[in-house]
Length: 293
Length: 316
Image (tube, rainbow over all chains, first blue to last red):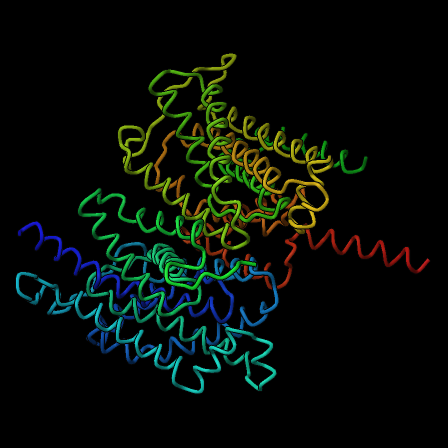
């Protein structure tokens, strides 16, 4: 019985952190699906979110979840600017060049954070940092519960937006066929900006909601970029619903692997799953099987 | 003829460098090794067109092999370097067998994943690598009475390494195999139709690239004499090697060398401004190169020279 409770405890922790992974991955998968850009700067946007949460808390005393609502519009504009400045020039360039451009962007952003804030970790204390919620025999940490819950809410909001609004329809049309979308009067350049903005905001939001649990360091980004790739590949490139499944799966695999196998290899389980899926089932675990070109 | 004359003059200057600047040897050694790594990376990344962001795995393998063999079994460093190269070629073969069916960015992503897994192995398997603590190299056998921890000796070893890699790549790309590599880079299906086996070409290129990287890593290990998995197995090093070659101009013999000269030089100039944030320069330059000079510095220069030559012959 105790073994079972411990298992459920781990499982719930994995599901909650998996919710956040799903949000990070959803942003990446959307950008890839519509723009065909492998965004290496994705984790850096998460790092920027963490540092913004830190500044807004230390200077204005704002709770990170409240600060998130204030900061995200600016994050969206920032992303729009970056898209105009760099990625919009590379629309028809080979996939390699957008990969390299975003890799360069990632280096610029993370090293700027390093110059601004130094290498030492920054933490943020919220009054409910150690609060827990008892659910039968399970004990859930409140910040983790909030993070997982809010992440899932944002993803649900995102898929409602994509599926039930005119803008969402335009985005889906652009991802299916850019030329076709242009022929029916969709401004695909504007759509690219919008999508990059949404993807960036998703990563930044994940930074805000993770901040009460983690500490911010300038080079935290690449680790999350990799996690986002893992989620994206597990769920299928460009598949938002798949990203939810992929995120939850990654969270569960990491937590269970760390507690039952070896905690040092926590990050390796996800990468191993990533390689296996990439090699054996490139359309993702949940995607339809299609002939690869 | 003219090129080889310029090369000889440069080589003579490089050989005299330690006499002129005896206190600036460390930076020169790092430049020579980085240039060698970038040129070796370019065999796969430039000439064969498979962008790898996992070459730090070969650096880690080459340097750890030398250190562990020297510390545990007292094996001479040249045997350590050769074993490192053999292991690197083996790793590249397995790695390529697994992932060469992936194309373009997917291959790149898989190289990151494999290198990351190897880094975690290097940190976790403490019985072999002493984990995050790192490994010291205390003493090495002395070839012909040369002390390998002497910076001058290391400088000439690094210079020899770079010249060796350049000669090998220069010879390789002029021959049949160079033609095959470029054919695979441009269009795998067309190469196959012309009777080339793309997988075999990519495998050989990867094995050569990995083994030569490991050779440079052996010199690097002696140069550092202290190895840490967070340093030499890590993604930033892979990125540094790849970007050096791409900024300089991939698929050109002297592009990676030029890239290393530019980046190490810029890193030195901005050392006090940026301190630890020295990869900022790599970031800015690669964005500029992707936007304005997609062929890299040397590539753009050669492309213009060739265009001018054709324009002139057309006017005649």
